[in-house]
Length: 296
Image 1: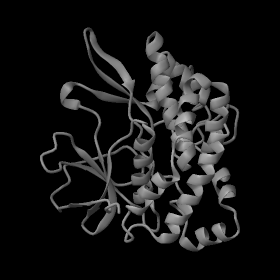
Image 2 (image 1 turned 135 degrees about the horizontal axis):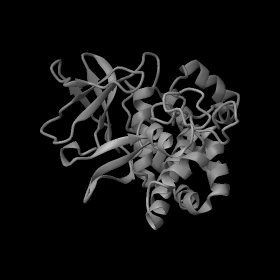
Image 3 (image 1 turned 180 degrees about the vertical axis):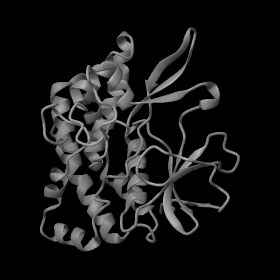
Image 4 (image 1 turned 90 degrees about the horizontal axis):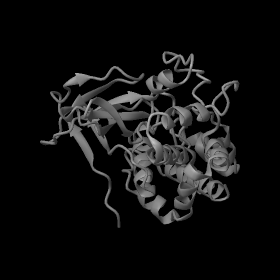
């Protein structure tokens, strides 16, 4: 039997610095001698943002998608998650968020416009990342980005806006240079985390889970003229057809996924954090998205 995921219990003196990026309160802290800092993010009340973030990261690791290390955490009785930094700042590395990347590569891109930013399209993102790396290296990094898009489709992550992906920049022979697409992060807006159990039960009973999955609008647009972002599952399927070189390897990885592995991930979340109904709903979602991606 799989053991439950541990919960990091933070002390009152844990916070070091406050993180300004994003809408939720969060702070950086150090954990048990780890040389890398961790970011604690509070869970909004009446949501499953904590378990969604944890499960999303675990499924990413299961697929082989590079992603931040996430642990369930608690601070002063408040629930949240802790995310280990993957940026080695002491070695001169930093992040260039997608908004900055696109503003530097796409004419007229407004990096300050986070909501309804239709220029944050798949085409523009591929163009900007492709221009950020030389030759075959660009192909490798675009394949990595494709993994994030397929992951989003699998877990229903609707929050891949232009500050929820980034490039890693580090020291080079002639100054700082872009080194890689950063690991995936911020998967909390997925797996029906905003639903109450009564709603989950209704959707399950009425066989409407797929309708729910297909309804959500994501943070990436298919076309700059579209009124809203494309559904994450639809985006992954369309992108696979248009850019098979980048996306098809990840569809093959989805083909190899075992539902028992999903179940093992879900059952490790403590019942105090995630109800049985939420677990059943997540499993239903994952079976639907896996099947759809396998047919892509």
